[in-house]
Image (tube, rainbow, N blue to C red):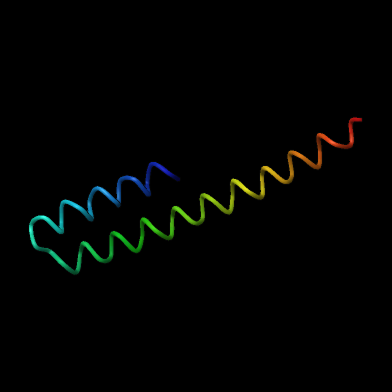
Length: 57
């Protein structure tokens, strides 16, 4: 998921360099959304892992 966010960030930067403002803005928004989804998934899995690990003690 982070690879997709990085890909869309690079597409956004390249589009901005060549003057495609609409494509750059859309790619940047998509990269931002994917990044935040990845962060949420990471936090959920981290909490789930900590809760599962704490029951073993």
